[in-house]
Length: 165
Ligand code: COA
Image (cartoon, rainbow, N blue to C red):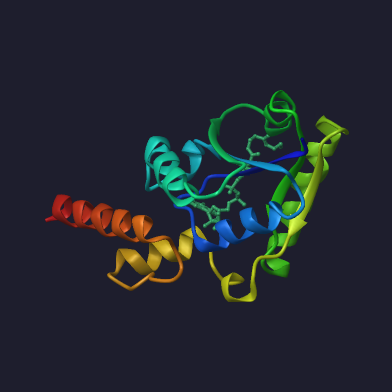
């Protein structure tokens, strides 16, 4: 079974991420969405919330697993029998950082390949950050994130607003 690891913070998961998962399933037999706590990024959603939102979003997808990970990504990938790390490339601006990360991961472990995939054009501008920005001001993110995520964003920003008042 060829397993690929799709790592990220997923704060929150978007249709761009899901598009990559579905593309990845055409190449790999199993995909593990590996969710990093990423405390330095001060995520809006807790790790537990992110895992729940992702699990709900992929509940109909066979051969997709969702797990939290910590430590080095390559160590985690090996522990799960992963042969590849999937990363999305949306625009040229993603490239430099992704190249650094891929080469560092290769240096750490030569046996795990990084595979870059491009999301569908309609999601090429989409980032979790831009989704949060729009939602925080009450903008609609319909069609950009699954319905459960839309609702969770509404709820989260309602709570933030109430706390601020
Ligand atoms: N604050 C909050 N969110 C931010 C941000 C910031 N300063 N900068 C970027 N983001 C958001 C963006 O919206 C973007 O969203 P997207 O998921 O829609 O693309 C996302 O975070 C991109 O961040 P990026 O750092 O590219 O990737 P990631 O957070 O999804 O994943 C890991 C990075 C987890 C894969 C990587 O840090 C990792 O492997 N960590 C484990 C340790 C390790 O092995 N490191 C590699 C060896 S050096």
